[in-house]
Length: 264
Image (cartoon, rainbow, N blue to C red):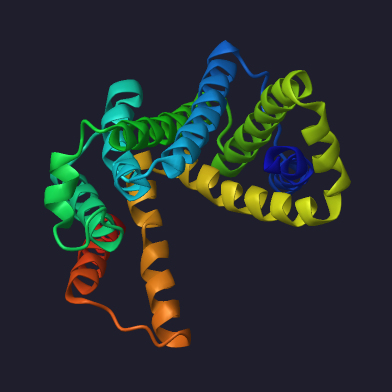
């Protein structure tokens, strides 16, 4: 339960931002809580769908479809928040998504053909559901941050992060208490290892939420794909792995998407 062990660090981050900015959040209204609840539930559901996808025999296909999150984010951001999709944004999203699909293909010989042909299979539908959940959660968290009455995007992001972690801790913790108290006991006993995971999760989420408060989610998620470029660079440097022509093309397309978003 990274949400449980990440909650104290999210609270410390919120307190630190409040002290640094000297500002306080006005009373959070119903729209804020609705956005946070929607984001928390969607993120939990997306994770559950992704885990189910990995249990499937052809889980690679499902994971590939989950990568459509970047495209879905752009659509949901436009529909729910009015975040415009410019031609450059569309190019960056399409280029980044295609690059991801080439780097993690369901079929290494015919990656795009397998992706298009397999969309009605159970793994593909689970993958799509996972991508939808993650996309909705990201858009909802941006909506929550924008609904707060504060001139500080840092404070809005920190407040949203703490509220989201609290909601998810209550939802998952309550569900586990009802379904399996033994699991809760094991989680509490493993607090030493879990604290580090909670800290890293909260730190990563602080970065994501701050970016969501600043920019449309499609820009943030596309720029976030740069992590794949870093991972391939590290594997090349440390493990001396050679890249195939397909992987080089995938990295190039990812780089195009990142550059277009960054320099727009």
